[in-house]
Length: 347
Ligand code: SAM
Ligand code: SF4
Ligand code: SF4
Picture 1 (cartoon, rainbow, N blue to C red):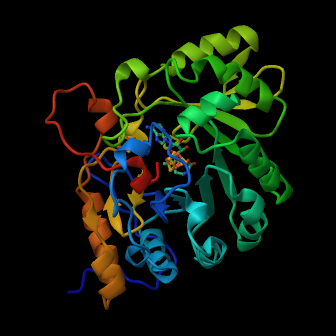
Picture 2 (cartoon, protein in one colour):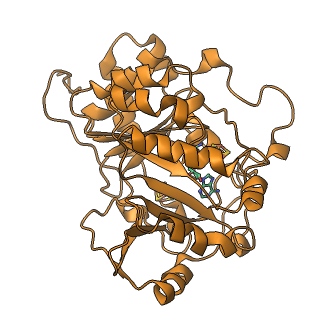
Picture 3 (tube, helix red, strand yellow):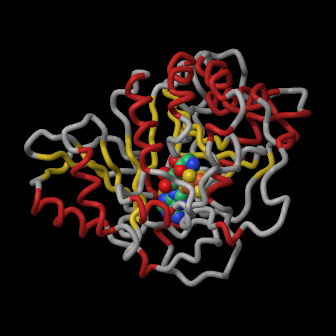
């Protein structure tokens, strides 16, 4: 008897991993290149030599990304995040978004970007059907920003990107802010002040030990618990109750109605129990955890497979075997191992 998942069905065929976590969200990196060199992600000195980035012909094509996303949707994925590297560097991104927006069953397409190309692209992305944008911005201090971006970011370019996205209709954006102790933590209150009173919510992200090239140390992390009290002393806040266990951020709102803030506390308060996210690199490697050291190469089945069932079956089998909970086990002794870099995986 053929036990494979039928393709022509309206309802998804849900899969669960070994810890009973469903597959709900997919993050696809559409390119591994970037126009920044953030020290916590892609430090310039780690990129010595040619051939560090994927040649463009190794990237999944638009059609292949669509095939991939369709397969994940069959298994229960409802939310897609497009990321990178810097996803806006991928030629023709709006056309890809347009293709993906037509996939039945996919309810939400979001994008994470450093923002500098939004003045050129935000209108086309909105027209293509992109639902949401997250812009990464670590500080309003020009010098600190330059230092954190490897000398590449200019504040006005990122702010212009945010404005362009607003004009294009992205009314409520998330602003991702990685906090590093002694680097930008003294500028966080100014950043929050800037976005208070706007519909956008800043999310303070604890600096994570992703990849190997950022030389992470726990001493560089500012636990988000510190911010809850520091912010609360200046602008009283209260938690927003969430019933979504898959939410990565704990949300708070200002009592004076000036907006919301999020805290992503992967180091101090890991949230693996609700992790329903899969990640695929720009060349088709499927990872079940941000901190994984090995991925499953889906490219052969996407590019050369002659039966779409095979791709779905492979993804389902990998997910069913998933037991990842790295952040909850961070303190356990383990072998030194090479982890995949954030700019390949996309965060
Ligand atoms: N280039 C885009 C950008 O920066 O928004 C998308 C890719 S980037 C890898 C996705 C997110 O990961 C960004 O918000 C970035 O700040 C975050 N990130 C990168 N390295 C990190 C680290 N070591 N710890 C925490 N967040 C990190
Ligand atoms: Fe590029 Fe984003 Fe990584 Fe910064 S965080 S180097 S903008 S991919
Ligand atoms: Fe998910 Fe891995 Fe992060 Fe845990 S450590 S929340 S399993 S990506």
